[in-house]
Amino acid sequence: MSADGAVTQLAGSRLPHAPLMPETEEDTRTNTQATSPKTVSKTGPKTEPEYLSRLTSPLQAYGRSELPGTEKLHIRNVILWTSSEAGIIGNSDLLMADGKIEKIGTDLSTPAGYQVIEGADMHLTAGIIDEHSHIAVNGGLNEMSDAITSEVQIADVLNPDDIAIYRSLAGGVTTANLLHGSANPIGGQSQVIQLRWGESAEGLKFAQAHQGIKFALGENVKQSNWGERYTRRFPQSRMGVKALMSDAFNAARDYKDAQAQYAELRSREKRKQLSPRPDYRLQAIAQVLNGERDVHIHSYVQSEILMFLRLAEAYDFKVTAFTHVLEGYKLAPELAAHGAGASTFADWWAYKFEVYDAIPQNACLMMNAGVLTSINSDDFEMQRRLNQEAAKSVKYCDMSQEDAWKMVTINPAKQLGIDAITGSVEEGKQADLVLWDANPLSVYAKSQAVWIGGKRYFDRAEDRQMTQAIASERQALIQKILGSDPARLQGETTSEIIEPLWQCDTQFNAWGQNKESRL
Image 1 (cartoon, rainbow, N blue to C red):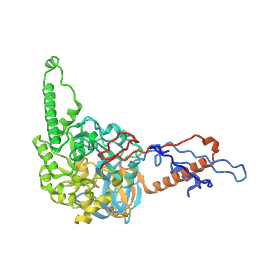
Image 2 (cartoon, rainbow, N blue to C red; image 1 turned 90 degrees about the vertical axis):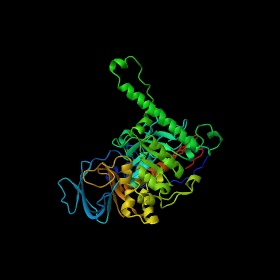
Image 3 (tube, helix red, strand yellow; image 1 turned 30 degrees about the horizontal axis):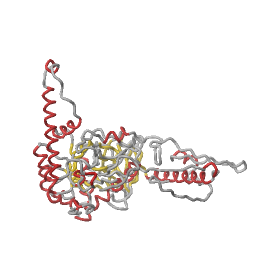
Image 4 (cartoon, one colour; image 1 turned 135 degrees about the horizontal axis):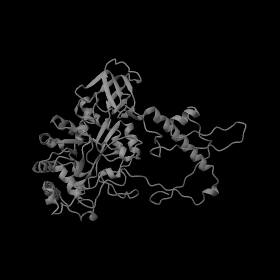
């Protein structure tokens, strides 16, 4: 029975027990997440095979029985994409130790205790960084009850079990900025994570990243085209969005002034009056005004982008990144003059009215105007192919491969305030690295290994072994069910509620409530 109540009849046929993987039983037990069946004596009575899964984190397919350790590696003779002024360097060696990039050069000697990876004809890059992501979140992205919800935090709903973490790792992604949805003009606080598959929710957090918050403009926040049940909340117009934000900034400024005045009082004076009432909603907005929290704002249309630029300048703060910003090419000089970054789609357009003027040359035109430009996903499927999204600017507007690769590495790192730590391949930086079997901008390129902080969180060979082990165990379980006594199965039903793919404007907060969805 499915989540919507529909009944599906299943049929199957009994097959022999699933064969062991090509490795020996001992190797399978060592290298995979499922044990092999017990061997059966040729002369003794037949017994049913026993399949026991290991305790893994997460406790699901591709979970880890133990976390990876920090490696000491000498990667030799690779094509190195530095994402720095050094550019793309052929025949390079790299030493990695203690989670850092220790040395880069040519024909380096291998220190004692270092493992060697022969990288001939392979490409080594910094890990991909996504400025706008919604993976690894449990229970919804939008607090839709109010137009301002700056007190809520994505950090409170991290889901380290999301398989999208592992799949994105396989696509070379090492860091993602998890944003609140776009149902509110002023939404919730964001959380930058590193894709440390197998870690806890706390273990995913990128502690050194700047604090951020999600703002939004356009169709989603005014909700005026969403049907009758969405016409009760202010604002219902674009001018209402601007007025609401102005009111919020004024209230936050008054709040921080009151806090500052109280802090300056002497102890005796403080005892004579009540301290200002803590307000977590206004506190987050006050941090924006103080330059302590970065604004990443969902946007599409030129007029709204220009409105928010003027609003930011009136309240004396800088916009860190206009995200999506599909009409950014129309006001690229204004974005550059303000110092705002832009994180856009490579070639999404015409999926709703406010994006009809999007063009695939948008990223090139903004970058040429001096805007710090990155490519984002806003979608877990696109996130694991961000290398290909970056390549589209090479196709559409002859952007150099080097600049295209920067749009998914060092540029988003700068937008998240982590460029001193990661985002490029330079000595002393954290070893967030991806080894590719082809040019990383190619549709044929596959990551062979992915390191975060010098720990190998994805390995292509290990992935193949786990895939085989999962398939073997699955087949054995199916045969076990088909071979069971039918009387024991009478009255049993199965149901499954699949976690939805969270989007910016997802309008539900629990599994199984996906009644409607808009981009």
